[in-house]
Amino acid sequence: MTMPHPDLVAVLAGLLAVLIAASAIGYALQRRLSPDGSNAVVENLNDRIRAWWIMVVLMGLALIGGKTGVTLLFAFCSFAALREFITLTNTRRADHWALAAGFFIMLPVQYYLIWIEWYGLYSIFIPVYAFLLMPIIAAARGDTEHFLVRIAEVQWALMICVFCTSHVPALLSLDIPGYQGRNVLLIAFLVIVVQMSDVLQYVWGKLLGRTKIAPRLSPSKTVEGFVGGALSATAVGAGLSWMTPFTPLQAAFLALVIVVMGFFGGLVMSAIKRDRGIKDWGHLIAGHGGFLDRLDSVVFSAPIFFHLVRYGWSTT
Image (cartoon, rainbow, N blue to C red; front, side):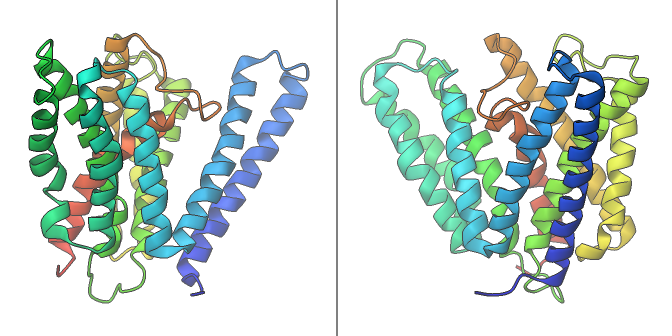
């Protein structure tokens, strides 16, 4: 087994230290403010911290496992997210074969192409071939009721849950001079910046939030929370430049792009949830909702981050 890079060990040790500190704070708050479990805010905080332990452990194991581990983890995340998304779409019996193709052919093929690093095909496989094939399969069943809506919803589900998410492990295929063998740290950089942005926007919003950005979509998002969270997460990204091929200024720019795209990703996914009359995509992750509630920021930022790095730093 290949030993993990010392920088990756340092990152995982840092995350472990943060989780231990968060757990200690959560325990102290529970003893002081919610000894009988009646304080919803404290209980939700501790649920989130416990879920973070599981997510960080799984992500850490995947990163240590390298290309195979990361590809398998995000393939599973795509499968779970696609399942959550499809449960909210207007599918009919005539769509079953098209859906089966999406779950059991297109999703595995997309991740196999990522694994063998065939950029020329995995970058167009879903938006070209899958998007043309799915309506053909559905049309062959002869059910035309709400056909355009049904197909558009399934195509959008594939785009969000599979195509966009698969750009996270695709970062391992980039060939960056002087950075060989460390690409897994790009994934750690992306995920840390995205998740820190979510947490910091929440904290700044609670402390200073007054002006709501889109109250009908997400009442908790405020201008003050977004600005404070974006600047803080950008500073975190600049501070993590040591684990990337970027200078601190470049890391700050890429972190800002990640934060902005993640914010708008969360807003778009909130619009879909409001349209379907739900609060969370699922209930699998205590305190966080479903897989898509954790992935909504990543799916919009990952493809943009991938292509910026590919065109700016990679030789592939």
